[in-house]
Amino acid sequence: MKQSTLIWTLLMVFGGLSLIAIQLFRDKGEVYVREVPVEGKSSLPEAQEQTYRWSTYKQVSEKEKGKPGVSFSLSRTLGLWVAAFCTLAIFSFLYGDNPLYKFTEAVFVGVSAAYAMVVAFWTEIVTNLFAKLLPGYARMSFLPDISEDVQSDLLYLIPLVLSVLLLWRLAPKGTWIARWPLAFFIGATAGIRLISYLEADFIGQIQNTIMPFIVFSADGSLLWIQSLRNTIVIVGVTSCMVYFFFSIEHEGVVKYISRLGIWFLMVTFGASFAYTVMGRIALLSGRLDFLFNNWLGI
Amino acid sequence: MKRTIPLFISAVTGFVLIGTAFIPQFVDWGNDAMAWFNLLAAFAFILGGGNLLKMQLQKISAQQPGWGYAAVTLIAFFITLYVGLAKVGVNPSVKFPEFAWSGEFQEEGSAFWWLFEYIFYPLSATMFALLAFYISSAAFRAFRAKNTEATILLLIAVIVLLGRTYAGVWLTGWLPNEPIIGSSGITYSDFHLPHLSQIIMDDFTTPGMRAITIGIALGVASTSLKVLLGVDRSYLGSDQEA
Image (cartoon, rainbow over all chains, first blue to last red; front, side, top):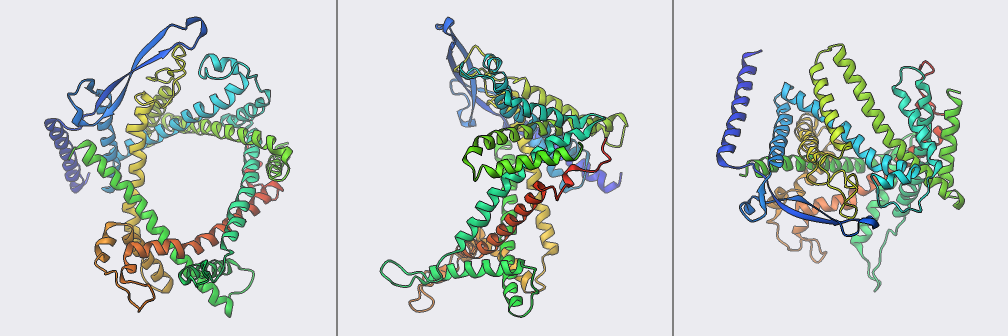
């Protein structure tokens, strides 16, 4: 390890430990919750009078500490510290690739893959496959609000079979069979996108561009600002489209129109870039707000 | 068999879904196909998880460099999967209290909610926030007003950036609300950076965005037709697959 790296690492570790010590001493970085009693009456006809009671906990601000029903939450306080650790570990990449960053990156990969799987399982597989194929079992387990009249829809065996074929991709042999569900997926995407893009993005955008160059108000006077705005949009869209049209050579008049189109595109790119930067900075300020406000309580 | 059936499946599915826009009798078929599409997308996430598992296990068994991080990934993966699928810490639904599994899997206070709130969200938000530094440094190094086009891009980016922050108000807030050219209605305050930024967004970026959107729509339509007609078969991969 280089001497400068060692010094920086020691400084960061020392800084981190100091921060933890200060936090503990200041009694900050704690989360408080309010107990909310919940009461549920039995939904089964044979046990009508039975009542079930449990509690849920809602996070409250630190100011409510000590009030009746408000208590310290160990799990959420631990969570706050874990979140602060994760945030700082990712920010440590600004210094350079380091084990702390690699560790949190590995955690992120694992958690996000499993998160997507769990969401897909509960929102799609259980709700739209299990409940369609076996409504009786679904009613008795995960989805008791399914009506008793609902019959199983055997048509859903097709997506089940296609899904099994898709998972066959992980098998050592016969992976070509996964092309069938993939073909369904690609075909469906192409079919949906073809119509929706043509309808909303092609026809819709052209329709929005067909507007008057000169706009008059109800009393017949010229609305020149509105007229100028319309003219800018019509001329801009036309010139950009001319620039995108490569079937003719960009010479003479076409060259000048396409040049104007490039300028309009540059304006769009400049504004989009500014928006992207702003979005990232908003996220950054959100994380800094979390660190300074929620965690450090400064 | 390996290539003809997939081509047939994609063509039939695609044309049935296109047909739903023109033939009312196809609407139910289209709804079914959409539901199946969503189900397959859900199974694709499982396939993704399975693939991640396979790759990480291979890394660990071969003791490749960084295999320890692969183990961390797997531990994080299994913990999240377990608490999410087992609904750890989830209370039953108030309407159906005797059904232990009837609660919402993302209920506040549950283990899965904890993982989302205190690990997944901070990590993903910070990852994207990190890009603020890199995007700024890349822009600082790459942006040069070398010609007219680059100057326009730079100028617009600066106006929009300043106009969307307090800096814009601070820099141009002093401009008076007095007319510039006689009674034309244009005032000095029209040149406030937030106002200029709004004019750029409303009137000058619209044409460019519209042209790009029209171009994308034409591209999507032509690519979709190529796929459905079997001209583009790249999604089938090579014939060498096992």
